[in-house]
Each structure stands twice: as C-alpha cells, then as structure tokens.
Image (cartoon, rainbow, N blue to C red; front, side, top):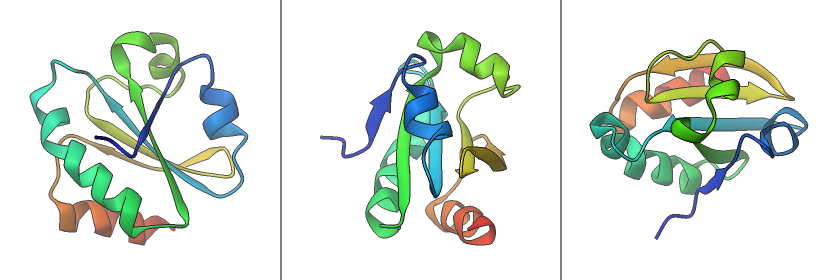
Length: 106
C-alpha cells in the first residue's frame, strides 16, 4: 500500500506549484521497469523526510505537464521549492543516491 499520493495533471498546480515548501514529484508509468525499481525508495524518503511533500504523477496521463517541464524520459524526479523546480534527476537511482539528491537541494 502506497503512502505517496498520485496526483493528476488537473491538480498538479494546486498540489505542487502552489505548495509552500519542498515537493518531490516522481513522474512514472505502470509499464516502466526502472519506475517500479525506485517506487519503494520514493516511499522510503516520504517517510524519512517529514518536511518534504512527496507525490507521484502518472506520465501516461500527464503529457502536458511533462512537456511543460521538458521531461523526455521516466522515471524523472523533480524537486520543487515554493512552486519552482530546483533540481531534476532522470533515471533509476539507489536509496543513498536519492537521499543525497534531496539533501543536496533542500
């Protein structure tokens, strides 16, 4: 059971761009092997980093959002602060790499 909310293109602005503070967005697809590999890691950082809002976006249902942020491949992680992208990570990564990515940018 996932603790990370899956948001839609329709509520992306409300959930991410209007949020005060940090938001980690995981762009994924059900058919994507590397996305499945990092899913438990995204769940883990959601628990570890209590001051970080973590959400997922199904790339198959959010083509316009993906175009807006220039996302060409998945998985892609975008880290937002107060509605602005502050860091991007494309591709699968380990839990220590994910922690380092977050810590380096918040």
